[in-house]
Length: 159
Image 1: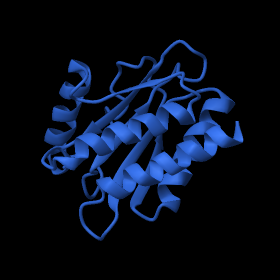
Image 2: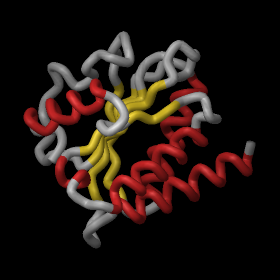
Image 3: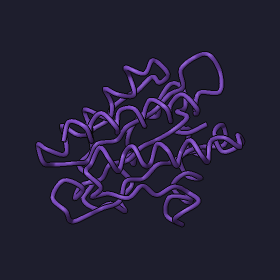
């Protein structure tokens, strides 16, 4: 288990390093909808790995969204500055009723050719952090992720 955790942290740091286009850190919003202790600890580990990399300014938001397809940011105040990436870990990830983690990016990352590889690497790291029980979907993989990315750009959550 320790070896798996170490591998996932290394993958996350590598992915974050390739996502970082400028010298300054990029902004990540991690939305935690999990309800089990184990899943919440895994989310905390992800946030910690991202922060410790020094490449990401990570904000964590807790949500009570009922389904993986609910909008966890509905009726929330907009941030002062948009994020580069929104990572949504919905309810059900911890208890096995959902195996989806949403990785949403705006135009700022979508314009960079290396971001596709970086997001794939980050997805792998997230999968490892959750013991291979989740799959990460992006706007390239799923219509819901695409529509939510467009919505979050228009609302000001993503740049």
